[in-house]
Image (cartoon, rainbow, N blue to C red; front, side, top):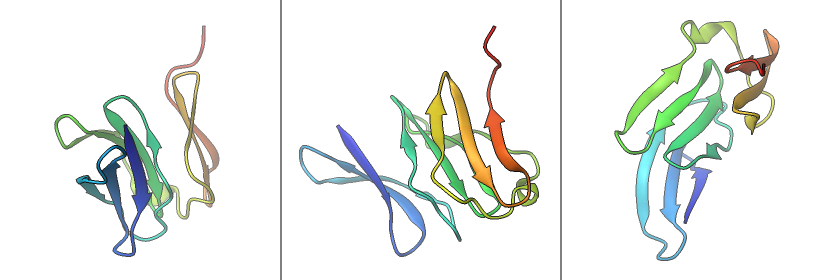
Length: 101
């Protein structure tokens, strides 16, 4: 029931689809890409930033240890098979998450 977008202040904003009411906002900064919305989390990516934000606690679930390693992000993140895929300037395609058995 939520929509998410990046506003002109480079923050991710969540809106309740049924009411249009603004919910959580997540600062992301330069190069912010549209997020992936999960049940209670957002997968986010922007310049020098990739991680998962917990909507229930308003805290980061995880993020890359050294954000500067990725540089610019070329496209919005993707979620498939429980893993996050991010196309980056410095490291190419990043696959974050557990390998399938």
